[in-house]
Each structure stands twice: as structure tokens, then as C-alpha cells.
Length: 73
Image: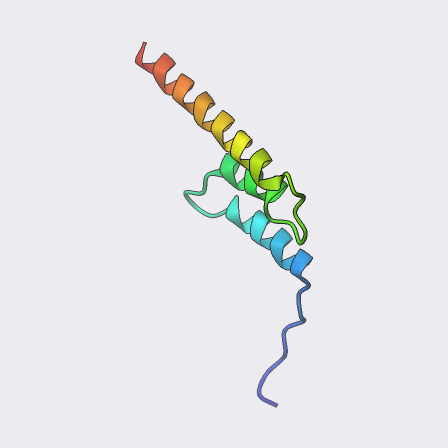
């Protein structure tokens, strides 16, 4: 025997695991990973997945910009 075979992942299992790994890696942007997991990393994303993800990313960017502005005083 060459070695043990890995069980085959379904696309859904793969995307779920990818979403979980994205948010746990060192230096990862947890908020952005959550947006991707919620809207994009689906086996069959809805028609509105990209616009919803884009809106969530823009909202996150705005929140972060406001925090930076407030920190500057």
C-alpha cells in the first residue's frame, strides 16, 4: 500500500473549511473572512451574493476609516 487515502471532500465541505481557515490564520482579516464566508464561499451563491459582499466590504472599509479618523482626533 502506498498510503492511506484521504476521504473525498464535497465542494460544500471544502468551502466551509476554507472559510473557517481564512479567519484563523495569523494576520488574517477576520471581518473580511466572515464576509467572504457569509456571501461568497457557497457551493451555489445567490444572484445577489456579489453585490451583498461588496456592500458589506464597503461598510467595513467605512467603519475602519471612521475609526482611523477618530483616532487622529
